[in-house]
Image 1: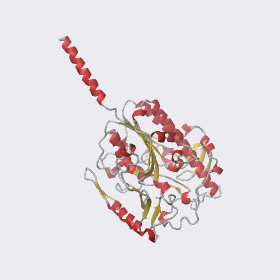
Image 2: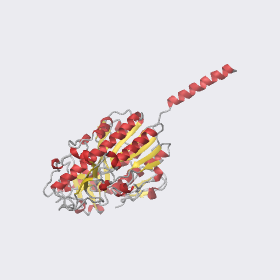
Image 3: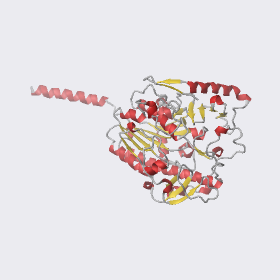
Image 4: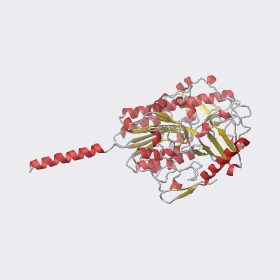
Length: 481
């Protein structure tokens, strides 16, 4: 009897062991997002002045996308879009609120992982959060509580930080003191990395990675730099002497062929920034990027030291791009390339590093990461699964990327960028040959030789804007102008 029981236990033990060997440990997700970051400021995207070694190290082991586009060129719509899984127009989100009232009980990206057994945490800004105000106050902003097992805010002094500072915007006589708000301010701050929000974010994110390494996790890490004010410990400014900063080429008559609605809301002219102040803005931006990059490095180090690097998907991106003087434009919102294109790096365990030039949207992250983690992709999502691109860099899932800014709409194909303002383009159009004119100096929309191409894009845009999306629960959204 005892022998029979002993043999039975051996058989059961073998079966259990076999089953355990057949189970795959779920992949973790580490989602890192910077605020207001243009890919032109990263050394892995070709910048030779602003060095970003930690982001570069992720690009060296992952897939770096060169044609990734946001769906809204300012914070609120972009973040609401990729977190909800819908285009901004589909959830009527062109402002700064949560998309929750529009999507009802449908699960947002992080919530979907939480409901599938993942520990889900947010550190600082993932959904919209006011900068600098929300950071100064340490509030939740337009966050969606249902997404997170835990959530943490990283309070910081922002423009009030001790140090030497300058107000660059609206201050031609240099008499304005450093002031708050969404304005161009540079502060070479006293103190170390931990004196500011992003340093505190890196510490908390690292702590959570180490603490939850034993279970599947989805951790969203939101860095607020290089969003204005450009505040960073002064050691990062030593790398960027203001007088040495080189501004983009200024072309006479550059705005002559751009529709009125295509002129950005912040320009050198309306900000009253002379060349000296413009160079200081670039130096302040680069210092903020260098500071943010150092914090990314701390989080990646924590991931490696925790022992789960080999089973964690790491994503690095930004909510939209940023102008640093191109066309005399500054900041975000415009639908031109520097504002609409974003850095995107995805590192997946076991997949070889690559550079992918296929068109992608931030909206694709939700279905792609769900697929990579073995979860069923909700059919309602408006993004596309691009996971095959991580194995085959030349693979394509879309022929155009779509983006909005509240004034107009962008369709970006491999060879062309078409922008339409107002109903059916009545407020103006732009067409750029991105192979011959990648810096978008010559608008071809009104040239007779390109009339057929413009008409083709009009039809394509009309289909996009009037397309009806239906999800698996029967909720219907229509994109309307």
